Image (cartoon, rainbow, N blue to C red; front, side):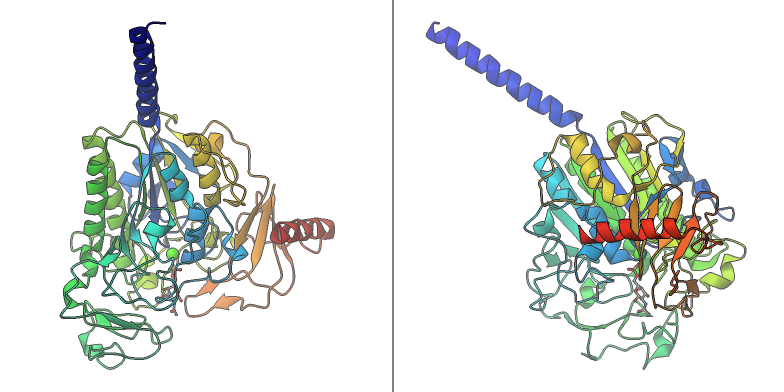
Length: 506
Ligand code: NG6
Ligand code: CA
């Protein structure tokens, strides 16, 4: 071979390699998870909500697959978020309950998370919105300095977050490692044990509130934006959010992220603050649902989805972007503020046909709306009753993007890619759901393990699904869990209890 020939051959080879690299990189779909907060199984018009319409979310369903048997891992926020981002049952790890506002990071930094795995597949990975997975290493966060470890150490390449929940201090946005609009002359201090600073609190200055906390549930500490919160904060006045602007701000950040990264595959985990308390949506939505602030917040959530879809359209990214819409746990009406959610719901059932709600081992705790749309890869207008969990996104997206799963990753995630794409209706073999107690769903049956917990949480008025006796429901015939068949089918109870125990011990 002559030298020129050799060089030609090498450079053609290189070029081909490069071309195939860029082509395959371009072919990988963008992935956007839109994660609602406390949105119930029956809270969308495409899931039977009659009182208001959610046209943007309904359109996702019309253009893709709407699942009726999809689950968050848990009936509350932090554990479900841990589950969707790690592919691991949260109850396998300590400190994955509802994270206090000063919790340290609970995601691993030494093993890949869902975004970490996608980063290896060549994706830009962002979290925008509610975090609630802890920050820092447990030595105490200084909110005026670099805040770490956090999302960037757990697999995201960009983050713009509300650190905990909307009802917990500090009520500021954190972008990458820093509080947005922080002022060194007005340092931020946060305390969850005792009052600090001179800011008014809900307890001492109720006349300054636009919305009153439920006296049984706390939420009466530092007042930010005329709403008292859980925890005390001082300083950071220029950084404090206004609740009515949160949805608009994070939606804008999402659109900016798309524009900046439109040339390469991206993954966005967009965690809306809606419809968690305190509900105070933008004036564009307040008073518009006829159902009070909770309904108005649903309208705002639907608007957010519409804006995200519109931005993807205008960037010509729609065809190859896979969108998942879901919720972190089931619905609750009164979760700490007297916003009249219950009185104004009228005959609307946020849980649809299901029993229980947020915090509950009954179905409404963790069975949630779940919609997948991807014009390039999914046929429109499908419904699926396949049993699937948010845990399964890890293994399914690994398959989709050509990543292999390492032995210590995503131990509870099943590859359900064909099911997500609407090409298979094969159920997950079993699924463990988690509230105060654990339950297992397998085939037609659900078994809830005995628990000494309260049967009803009177503050939020939700049946928690606890019972000291075993509970067995035929979910297919009795989705509302009305008939406990445990005494009729002792062998079934025994078998499911053993299966649950084996999974727990794994
Ligand atoms: C509870 C709060 C509730 C809400 C929830 C977290 C009380 C009495 N109740 O502890 O208001 O903040 O935590 O919700 O403090 S979640 O969706 O983020 O899990
Ligand atoms: Ca939640």
